[in-house]
Image (cartoon, rainbow, N blue to C red; front, side, top):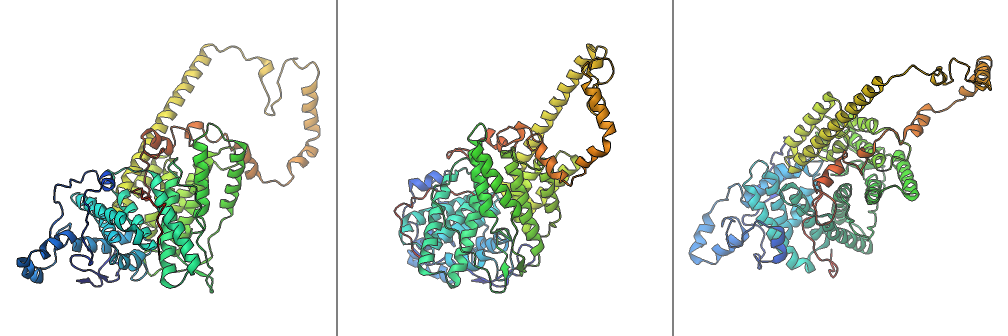
Length: 566
């Protein structure tokens, strides 16, 4: 069976996907009672057969074991039930691939052109793809969640049993697929420590690639998997206190094309060289949140990172995608939104460094996102900057636009992550509104008390517009009178001092860097989105949940003794 010329979720003609009834030819799962798997797939009951016989690997084996059933196989049509493998792969092709890449043209979505062909010969990846499609579709059809759990169980079991013989790129693709799948299942919690397994896979793949030499399709697939891991790893570190591991991963070689024209990355867009800097900011903020005050070393590192991020620029030329809904300019604007959102987050963590106010930085982010039309596919990677900027909005009209933007993104993505982000944003708004209301009430009480005991104004405390005392004979030395006289007589000379060219904006920023943000609105406070997640225990220690912005890893694979291959 083959799906030819299937229409994508937004009318894009998509590449054919070979679909084999009953899946690829490999043996069924041997150990359904694996304790490590059952710990993850908590709701699966091994005593209940929830997987339909038709179209499933285990069902196919059961039928083949019965000679009387052979004629039924020969004449049996495809199983088009909602949870069948036939329907799940159609969903994967037409819906899921479209929210995993900002390029979804006929031949440019790597989930369709690289991952699926690899999955047909890799049992663990094969079932991971089905889990991905099932969890994605469960937003509209909740009953598909049980199929997603079953495919996840099979994928993890195959991975645990065959990891010694798996290709490195296949193992990494499986891990990333399961990571996305689990992040879309809003009822599953995990910890950032699971990224260590993927990190080891990436490190091994980089070492093998450098030893063998990157070439052909292998380098394209590995670059895609590396960048996908980087995206997920960086976004996860922005929300968690748990460290992802001390092992450093080599940067993927960013070869400059001969003609100077780069390709738009499926997830990083134009920001492939920016994400390593965002990752360094995430590491710094983790250190900040573990301390009560910022050390000189932290402040020094923060100003260096701020300078690098401010100077960052993407390559000038990019190859336009085949996908008409993905414009190069939209990727530029999204990359800039990430840049300013990172500067906002850095300011909220280290307010000692000179910076625009949080409100001004957030406004920059929202303007950049607002100039990207909702029809653009780049909206699928705008979750983080929109979350960071949304929490700073206090104008009702801006908040209404923000809610409409999230609703539009949810109608396209259909994942539980959007719902969780909205819950956090609404809670931040509620806390900040209550905080501001209480502050105004305290000010009114203070003014009331001051008015009750108002005394005649003391002449010695009245000042002129120049800050000098007015009236009375409280200046026996004559200092203030002389100073005021000198100021009037020497006005021309003093004007010379103020007429020296200077950057007033820089002076204003330096003067207000610590005064334009309250402690409770920093990353240590309760009025920050990180503070809300901390209170709700959605982030933090390895055993706790953290907000998933497209980056959760589902299982702690032991890779210490694994020698993968390509």
